[in-house]
Length: 110
Image 1: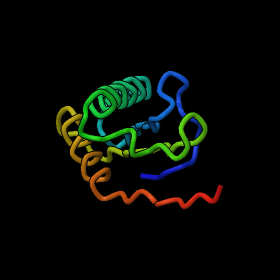
Image 2: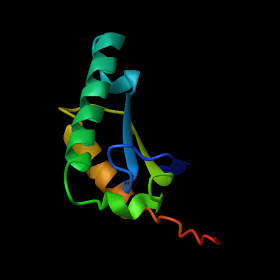
Image 3: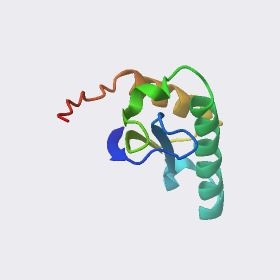
């Protein structure tokens, strides 16, 4: 989990951004690189829909200056072993990372 300062989406000027990436290790046991890539992007898209579309995370808390600056959260997950569909494990790992992340306070002098 990491935070960067970014520009907000023009459609949501008072919201922050959230991005999920999933990397599947070759040791997961899938047949080829194409399957690993497809599964990785599928899980990342599911997580984006789950956490981006729910109210569990107040995206307005990620706003620094409306329309100019916001926090961009990057959740990077690595799956080392696959004994089933890894969305469950990735979802739990993402939830735990989000729960333990402290957003820095910024004091602005105008």
